[in-house]
Image (cartoon, rainbow, N blue to C red):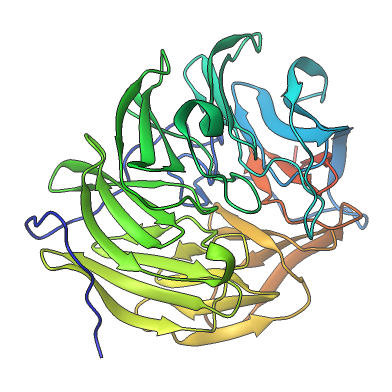
Length: 404
């Protein structure tokens, strides 16, 4: 039976599209140029030596599950050591540290290693970062100097989730958007240049997913997968347009919504599962739900009508339109993935880097190599012929897959 949610502001029939794009070879934010986990970069190779792709450099950037942003020949990430967070800017070719920005922040290990989980966002000549305790910084890309900063708990009365803030900052036009989880300020838009609050709206507590932008009838919108479910907002003023309740244990809704046409896919772990929702004039309607794609912390990627992601600890291919499982692969643990040039780039939980063909017919690995030790919950990034892999303790490796 179809389920319908309460529609707060009624609109006309919706059409959805990606909100923006940037240079394809760079990876300037969480889940890449269009925040969908997909890179159009081609020309890289899976013809690796027996020991795997050539390691160009290796560095330790501190404990945490933040992934990397790659822009303008630089790599940006966060980590924690001795209750001190470090935002690091590294030379993408050598791994040399170009600058660091540090501040006091608890490591706060809680059933995992702890440390920051939000990925930096690069926009123009600025970098935006968020700590798990709510330290929000706008930094100069060239120097790391602070342009402006906020503390989400102290300055905005945000309620920090149990495992800390993990949503990666979203730049949309002149605004920087975040789920803060404060009273009457569930989601907040800041002026990206000054940090001034442009709007704040909603009463939902924050969870661990990142905001997803999209357009509808030429209206800019954002999808927030917060502690109470999926909320769609008008990006101009934060007005709630629709909400679909999705309650999970510990309020863990950890993924970034996937938008395709008028459909939105959401997924959570802890036995909850996933659902495909349709957005229309009547609100959000559930088309199907399943417990066969329970994303524990890392999001799926949608490619040619199929979802590829981790059902807890099992790599799974699922039909987007029906929820039917096409195949599963159990050798990678709680991994993560992206797509580059039409191929899956996967990091397994135990440090294996895998490239596979995204086919609904079967699991088709093309290359596999051990590149890291220790637990790896961090999403890999392929940019400019290099693959960047990181483990939870902060070991970051850069490998050459350019074929040159």
